[in-house]
Image (cartoon, rainbow, N blue to C red; front, top):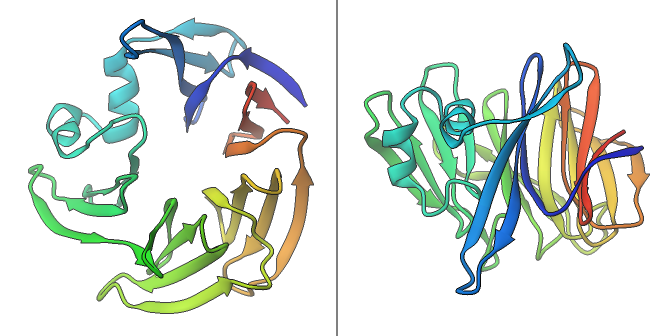
Length: 223
C-alpha cells in the first residue's frame, strides 16, 4: 500500500484510464470548505489539477448542470448512471431520486431501516442494495416496487459501521468504518470472501483498470 495524496479526500471516481478525486484545500475562517479536484492518468502516472466541470461531468454526465439542482451537496451525493441514461441519486439524508434524461424527477423515496437512513447504495442486476452503518446490515430491495427482499448482517454481522460499497461483478466490497476493514461479499451466494484490515478508518474503495484505491482518514492510497 502506498500513499499517493495526503489530506482529506472526499470521493474517488474511477475512469477507464485513470481516476478523479475531490479533496479539501482549506476550511476558511467562516467554516466554508474550499474543494479541489485532481486526476491521475494511468497512461503517464501523472497527477494533475482539473476543473470542477470536468469532475461534475464524470460524476453526473454531460447534463450535470441540471442534475446537481436535485442535490443538496454534489460532493456527498451518490450518483449511479443507469444503462437507460437515467440517473439514480442518493442523498446523505436517505433520500433517493430517479432522474429522467430530461432532468425531471420520476421517482423519489427514502431508504430507512429501523428509523436509520442508509449510508450507501449500489445496483446489482435487478436489485438495489443499501448498507446501514448504524445497524451493521446490507438490505436488498426489489427495484420494481422497492420492497425489502433480503437482509445480511444484524446482531451477528460481518460488517461494522459499513459506510461505502463498490461492486465488481457479483462481489461487493464494503468499507467498514468501525472495524477499519474491507469486507468482500458475493451477492449471489452471500459468502464472505476475504477481508483487508487497515490501521485507519477506511472510507471508500474503488477499482479502476487493474488498480485498487482506498480513501483512509489520512489520504488517498493505492493498494
